[in-house]
Length: 289
Length: 256
Image 1 (spheres, helix red, strand yellow):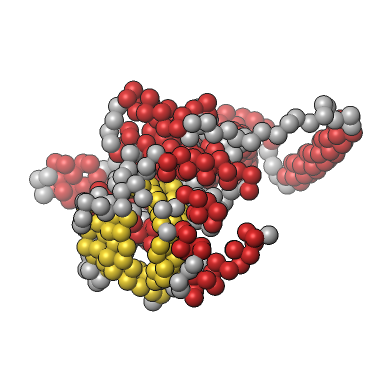
Image 2 (cartoon, rainbow over the protein chains, first blue to last red):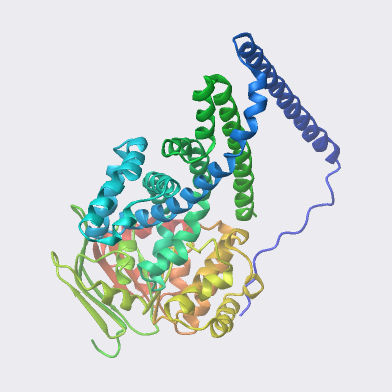
């Protein structure tokens, strides 16, 4: 059986006014470039101004140069802790979101309790409880003759990743939930109409589409995480904040050391934002005609 | 249920909150019959169709399709697994197509075969291509829905429903979201299906098409079936005053 889509005849050859379009596009591009250059000049001036201002007030640039490398060595730890935490948080958030949308009383109860307790307490307290509080339980268990108690005694890095994952997992649950709910009801209905069950619908239809929506948000959470990871310096993890703090206290060079750390965090987020923008553009590209 | 019925609906009620949308509807459809449901917007005709495959949960009543029957009593939980099993007897085509945007046309068509019927992919692909051929879109098999026109999308959606080899095809205003010049290609596919003896229940506003293709038309108004008969009767000599009022402006337009 032949069904043909209607075809319209082509236009009468190329548009003779093509030059005009190109002229307009070139002008727009030029104006955008000039604006960007002007903004860049303002940024450079602000940085010069801030640097000059600092140098007026007992700021030791030689100290900065000498200790820059020491702080810089913590960059890898900062990135590593953030990456590991955002990965675990993503898994937690996926489970949390599925639970929140499940309609199952146990799953709803657990996920609601988890989100409420994590969002209702400060991250710093959570870190203290996991790093300092849990070993107390572990020791008590070992004393009672349960050797598995040492599971509760975590290293600094493990505690840091656990705390950040649990914390971000709770906030990201809501992102995942919104992403899943942003997929139109029609998609679910179409999947139901060909006989799929709930799990199949989630796995084959809803999640592949929701992930597209969510990935930029996950990247944003990762950028936020890079800065919140500074909090794990309390456990003595040798990331950038801890390293900066060490010399700052020892030599009373607070401004110098924390300016180094701040600059490194700032550069890290600039690079991350740029990467995130590229990722977002690439994902959008795949969905366009 | 007699041998000459593939769908039987008895005393179907549907409530949305305190809104009584279907008020005890009963009808049956014979095998190979094409039944068109017409009515004003808000009359309950789409809800009626969607109750047939449990996309809307009926509030009470009995639905029997191809020998499988589900009796729903108001205020009690009903057997969801049975409802899901009964869905396989019906194929649904939606107003908004609802193709899966992350899959190619062919993957859309074979999704149910592979995921639900657990058919190996090598076997599902030739079947998928067969059904894409049936709607005239074999050459678009590797294209994602975003690159298809509205009419092409709807034809892929029809192929997706047909691939599950349902006993009955349900169409919920399949041309209402299409540009006028694209409606014809979808109606052509549906006419071909009717010609091949597919049992179909169609909600549509295309009265000309209904007149051509339908064996039977039911007119729904305010949750009741007001009139039930062949197209000649409904369009030529409607018995009920409400049917006359509904069709009057449409007949005037067609006379022009």
